[in-house]
Amino acid sequence: MQSIRKSAPLIEILGIVQVTATSDEFIAREKFVVGLGCGHDCSLNNCNLSDDFTHWFLPYSTGKVEIVIGGHTLHYGKLRKISVDNSVLRALGGETNAETSLSAVYDLLLKQRGENRTGSEKGVLSIEASNIFYVRDYHKVLRVVNVHWMGNRHSDNWRHNGRWGICTFPLRHQPVRYQRYSRYWWKGWNDGCQVFSFNPLTPEARRATLAK
Image (cartoon, rainbow, N blue to C red; front, side, top):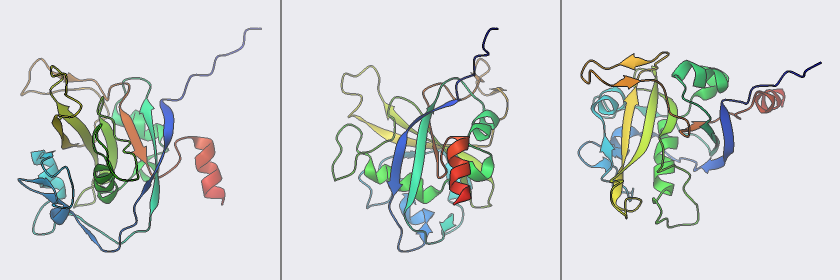
């Protein structure tokens, strides 16, 4: 009798990274400065913020405010195949398990220095592919925050000469054709994109965590 081959998980586990504990409220407008990018205490203060990110996460005088939280562990892995958001969310155990925070995104940007990293902690953001976070916006709607490296791939020094881009999307559960670009289809997040979650990435690990 031929054995049935079990399909590989959608997400290949890469590791974990510790998010620095915050001592004060995280006020998005103070960290992600419109026109500058990340706040003055970030070495990447020229990162590019999309209009949707500004609209959904930085409205009014404060933008999104997150309560004081202790240090968290972020689990991250990479997609094995092109996937739309509902497939990624299902692999992460649903929206609640998938949700991260804007302060975690900011902390990883602080740790990251492209290929020229300083400090005691190594950055884990990919400069080869998108880094995907599921975060609730100012109005508590779950959005996709995509952090990606904007370097000129035609330059020999593209890993060093570039900046971070941060853009935001609504959850997309099927391929989308953008009318503005008649030939452009978004078929899903490409294989190799990194996905981040506060919860373990495997069902077995999630169950063990909940049982504690």
